[in-house]
Length: 167
Image 1 (cartoon, helix red, strand yellow):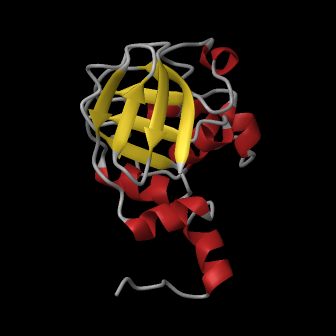
Image 2 (cartoon, helix red, strand yellow):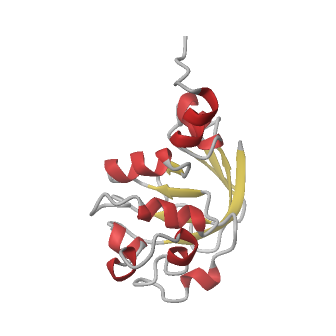
């Protein structure tokens, strides 16, 4: 699984209220509508800048704060297949994977806003095409990649009826 897109870089401690402001979370369940407000409190024009396939890149503790599932969902509904960060809040990480969002932990210092990035998921590497640099990342276990490929844990279970255990 190889993903390619442009980076949109943010700092440390991007909480779920920065991802999707609380003033929208309870007004609608329409994820396409909520996605229009992605990262609005940090960058009001973000949704207009992001293109399908682009990535969010961040520092430490991405997704901290409340555990609402809307945060990883609006990222996915905005057409962003992956978030690359130094670390993730644990509940955000599980919510993201459960909803089919790729979350990769690595040192993001070598990635700048606007860099073209290529993610090689199974190999655990990221190529910064803009800087011609390879960055090693944490390898996502095979069973989680399968969940991501199916679009999340619900779709996975609908298809396979159970979790396939590795031998």
